[in-house]
Image (cartoon, rainbow, N blue to C red; front, side, top):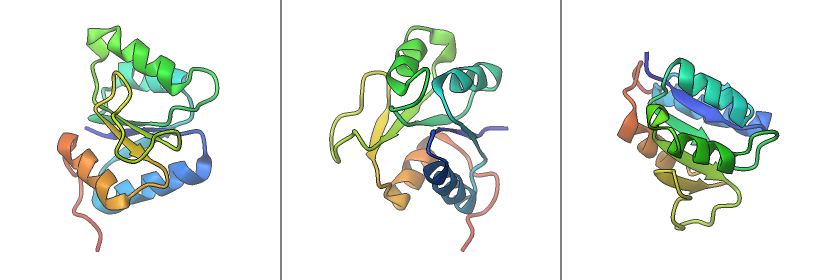
Length: 123
């Protein structure tokens, strides 16, 4: 099954992202650091990764370098971070960049480029 991997250490933000994706019909999983994200990507490749950059332990910048350095781990990455300015280019190794606070419609549109819904969107 295809899913969205949310890599976010702030529990409130992770919950909001997960609920937005649930409501839009996308399966998702939350991990809180880059090491857990790397394990998840190796175990079952997600259709896209939503990645915060400022994480404990292995941060988002390091994870991007690791993914770029190993073609077997090629996975679309959308950076979701407060350090991203609206309209700025995505960091190297990522496909998209969204600034916090998140625009829900834009987030769902980006995920929709890479993932298939598992359920119909909730109205």
